[in-house]
Length: 354
Image 1 (cartoon, one colour):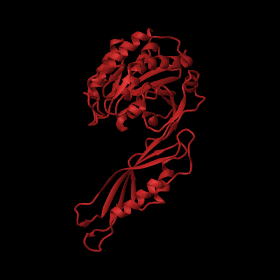
Image 2 (cartoon, helix red, strand yellow):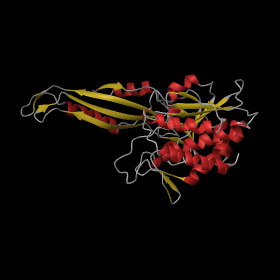
Image 3 (tube, rainbow, N blue to C red):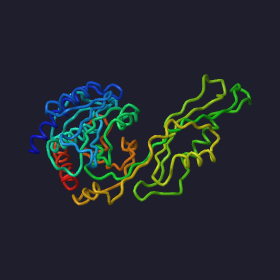
């Protein structure tokens, strides 16, 4: 299929998606737009909540299947925006707008790639396209709720901005809600047991502790205290101090092991918010990775978490755009990156499915 035609359609679709607010849990209108676009290409679509999916025309249940997945929800624009986040303006080769880089460019490039193969017969693999919601909040009504409805998937390409390099591993995410307990008293007298001071000791441990096992791809585990709250009024020694810890975990540890180490070293009570977002990796000899290496793309371990963490099969994270621009003010993607993304996705898949 003509790459230029695919690119123009992709660019137009992305501009349309940018103009539609699609915050996580509120992405129904972008789901409508994606459905309408695919149906305009005579593609039969399926929908579950705000997740749109379809299979290639000559789907064969006897063949293995590759999932092409990216998300259409966005974070909310931060206060540093100087532009209208929902105006898809192009200046100096840059397409501005909320979600343009994360992960709109990846999504429309994968949609174009799917369209390229949709009518082809005798592919070695089936293709399933899934445009999903709630990725930005790791919600349960995105890819997680959709996976049981899909045909059996053997592996996936997950569209996230990687400069079209190969994110073969990804750190897991463990969020802990912690509470240090003290004893109330009057601040003017030597009374009580200040929960803030007890929390400070634990927080210092989080700041300085180093895990022994360091991954070649993902480096060391990283723990960051990101939220803290305590106290009710100035003259009362606080009885509780609550704080939140963001922990990024390499593939050499599981969540239970990390939690066990933490409990041995701190006084605070800890409650994990979720144990769903495990670290992941895809082997370097996997056909998708080998195809990417053949195309001179570099491979690396990603510190950020994506829907790849929720997939129980090998998944390669790759896409146009730069992760460093994700969630930034005046977000943008280079329009040439979208064209390159389509071309490289097709070149990569050609090595695997033709």
